Each structure stands twice: as C-alpha cells, then as structure tokens.
Length: 242
DNA sequence: GCGACAG
DNA sequence: ATCTTGTCGC
Image (cartoon, rainbow, N blue to C red; front, side, top):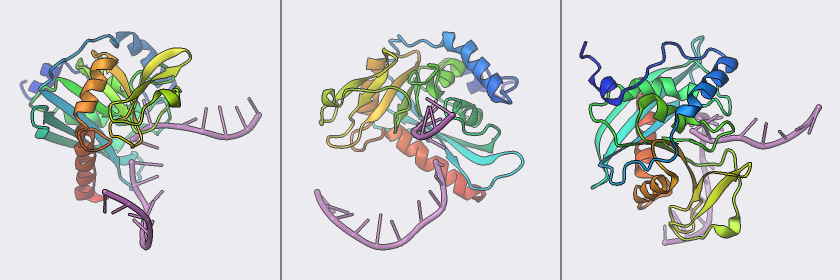
C-alpha cells in the first residue's frame, strides 16, 4: 500500500493507458491543455530543482527503442545533487514532432516515482508552451505531476524572435513569439554562447522560470540540472546493454 | 503542394 | 536522439 510514497506526495496522475496512436495522443493533449497554469508565480526560492532527460539506445525491438530516463535533484544552495534516480524501458511511441511527450513521459514518470524527495521545480529537456498546440513535454509533465515545471530546449521548435533584441551577454533575452503570442523566451545563459529556449510548463511564470534557469547555469550553456541528468541517463543506458 | 520539425 | 575524427582555442 505504501510502496509508492512519492507517487502520492507528487500526486502523479498515472495514466491507465497511454495513447496508442497519433489521434489519441492529439486528443489527450487537447484535453489536458486547459489544466496547465502558465501564470504561476511558482517557487521563488526553490530548495530542490530536478533535471530530467532521456537517452536512447540503438537496439530496436518489436516493443520499441531502448530508453533510459534520469532525474537528478539539485540543492539550489550548493548546486550539488541530493538524489538521482533512473528507469529504463522501451519507447512505445515513435518520435513525432509535437507528440514528443508520449515518447519520453512514460519512462520519466517511472523514474520520478522512485524519488524520495519532492522537487520544488521540474526542468526538462524540450519545450513547454512553445509548442504548436501549446502543450509541450514540460506542460504535460507539470500537469501529470502537479509540480511546477518548465522546459529548457537546445533548439527552437515554434516561434521567432528579434535577433537585434537579444544581447550577447549572459542574462540577455528576447521574447519567443509564435502566431502573435509570446510562448517563451530566448535566453543567453553564457556570454557569446548560443542561447537556450525557455518556456513555461505548469505552475510557474516565464520570468521565474528564466531566473532559475540562469541561476542553475553558472558556467555552461545548459543548466546543471539537465547536464547531470543527461550524463546519468547515458550512463544508465550503457550499463544496461546498448 | 513543399519543406520543416523539441529529443 | 544517435552515428563519429580531428581540430581550433582557452
């Protein structure tokens, strides 16, 4: 009964069944989209921030590609990891731009359920609001867990910005606009380095999300959360049979 | 119709 | 995402 304490702590609404095809996936996004809160304000002084990432293995199979998810929780005071968990599985959904969450969410949730610490904020690889239907991975993850979540993507998906408005210094940013709507922010985390694309997922506003992303990226382009999660997910994949 | 397309 | 050598630079 008490085998999943974290599950209750995070109020994860584990899907009884994941979509099996694109039509079902699109319908689910439309149904969940209204549940995402993009106003926050969200945690102003979070103690624990979790970074999530998924690595892919070559081995195919009738059940799908091998995937390894990793969640690394950092203490914002020291930027040192306080807990890290992993989970491996077979991706049951193919990679379809716009339906990316259905490929990574199952295994990410499996990993999150192993966490004993409840993160104050979730930072994932990919988009949140900056999505064609305004419901990227970060939104889905936030709604499902009930935790504040934001997306930090390495490349843009939807939206454009004014290059002239984006400074070259660390901390500079420009609004990411799509169809006349601000869906995120192009943020320079390191002077003279390519920017990252931040968008809200759930329970946190854009300003707050960007503030935390910048604080978590003191030395490299990507925040420490995603850097550590990326490394851990790859290690897990290797030690599992790639 | 054509190309582009988070990871 | 992943497949992959060397190379330029701090």
